[in-house]
Amino acid sequence: MSEPVISADRLTREFTVSGTRVAAVDRVSFEVGGSEIVALLGPNGAGKTTLFRMLATLLRPTAGTACVAGADVVRQSRAVKRSIGYVPQMSGSPSRGLLVGEEIYCSAQLQGLSRAESRRRSEAVVRAFGLERLADRELRFLSGGQRRRVDIAIGLVHQPRVILLDEPTTGLDPDARAELWTHIRRLREAEGVSILMSTHYLDEAESLADRLIALNGGRVITVGSPRELKTTLAGDVVVVRAGRPGPQPWPTEELQRLDSVRSVVADGDELTVTVADAGTVMVGLVMSLVAAHVMVASVQVHTAELEDIFDEITGGGGARWTQAASLPHG
Image (tube, rainbow, N blue to C red; front, side, top):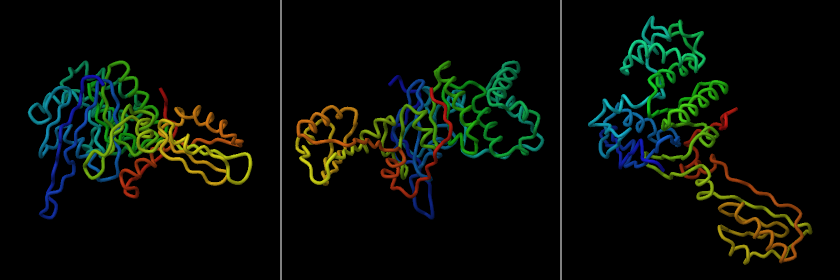
């Protein structure tokens, strides 16, 4: 991975609840490299929003350290704020009478852009997120999905080096979601921005993120690419059905010796082999079956879904996963 643009070292945030100290984020350590997209996944209450607020300098850590774009989030908070575009989970209350275009323009100026550059950048993001028809409307009259698009435009108007997105596509329709991620991909390709995002859309995370970080109870449970997590935590299941009914001369011992095979279960005319990656064992599997004179009727490979993996490692029921629709690939 390239030099980290975001780094956290044993980052902790505690709150007092009914007289008891509770760690919302508990000794979390991770890094995000240059031009990398990393997704935070976890059930509600896992600590994702608290973590974002610390990285955005809105919440002071109880312990540990974090740096964003080379600046410490506590000692160099102004430098951090200039480097990031932060889109929080919840929008603030809009000012009465403030128009969409004015809000975006003022946000650009607050980031230190000149009047001319603020105008140019605000007009650019209005076009990028299809806000032309909303630019002269008051924020307080927008729908939830419309307001979300404005929030994202505000977060990106100053062309930040680092983008923090806390469930950015919640409330967006599939077309708006696809447009957002097309724009984010272009930013990464053109300007090398780094992105830390959270989402409840697992299809979105798998399609977009280079790496996933699973949080639960304020702690990091596991880190890896979507494929690495599938391979390491779940793997593939190969089901072989024989062409003749009844018990077969399944070569169970030979199959157990194959690399990445985790278990082999023979049940009459069906054989189930659990492996880290089916692609690495299929040749050996077929050769073993041929050598054992097993007549094969069918071979099926079942790949684990992220939902199954994260339900298992986060304890299931507390998570709320959603399937995203029509995600762009690129």
